Image (cartoon, rainbow, N blue to C red; front, side, top):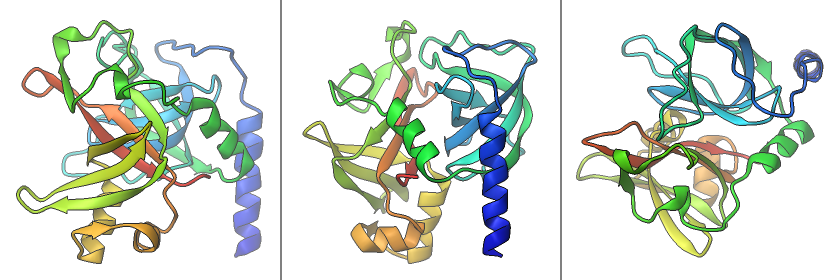
Length: 238
């Protein structure tokens, strides 16, 4: 079994290395694109575009009552819609894809670590350029990112708020104590399975199946006119 897994990993690495390399992200309606999965939500999938190395949000129409089942570091393929709708000023990295992504395989190791290091968000100011949990949609001008891959300075914690049964991620970053509503389905299921109101340290590592090092934060679609900071993924080093 180990030999078969190693062979599959080698094939995926070869596939990724043979993809054309581009200095910048190029989006052509109808084009086939490839990404390394970072995290997912009910409305989109955040990936590293494997040709340019840029982080992108693929808008996906998941089937009704279906939870996204893609895991971090899976390699996926999708076709950009003929109308990619890349003009959302609050989510400038978002584009629309047709249908559901096709899973090709999984990447691990040094190649993933290098990709993550290149897109990690520097700790040089408030998350997404503003303080607080949200900002009015009308304030966005397309010049702020809506994705942040954060190298947590203090290990993340998962917490359940019983008042509304919501899941939260708490971590340290740039001397701030950051709390984000968690919409990572894998993290939420881990907390449910543990039947705990909080997970941290070794307990969190055991429940997730890996030691979380990165927090993937994204801006939500507007709700009552505001876009909220949320967590859509907890990731290991590679």
